[in-house]
Amino acid sequence: MHQKFTKPDAEWRADLNDLEYKVLRKKGTERAGSHDNFPKEPGVFNCRGCGQPLFTQADKFESGTGWPSFIRPITPDAVDEHSDRSFFMRRTEVVCSNCDGHLGHVFPDGPQPTGQRYCMNGVAMTFTATDE
Image (cartoon, rainbow, N blue to C red; front, side, top):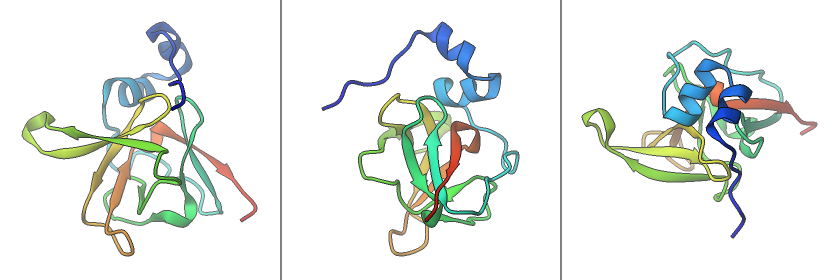
C-alpha cells in the first residue's frame, strides 16, 4: 500500500483556485457545461490536486450531462469510491486514490462495455496529450 499524497489546507488553498478548492477539497460541483470539456486528441486526464493519471481520452464519451464522462478509470486503483448520502440522495462518490480529491460520482447508466458513467468535474482534472 502506498502512502497518500497529503499537504496542509493552507497549501491546498494556495495551489488551487477557488472553484478547484471547492470541488477537490470540499466536495463541490462545477456548473454543468461550465468546463471546456478538454481537447479531443489522445491523452490522459490527471488529478488537478496531485497529478495522478485518472482516465484516458479513449474511455471518454459524450453523456449529454454537461460534465466530462468516462466508462472506467485508467486503472482500477486510480480512484476510490465511497457511499454519498448528501442532499437526500444515494450516490457513489469518486475520489482520487492518491490525494482523496473529490472528482465526481459514478452512475450505472453508462454505455457498454462497462455500463458505468464516471461523471467528473472538469475543473478537478488536467489533460496531457499523448501520441496514442
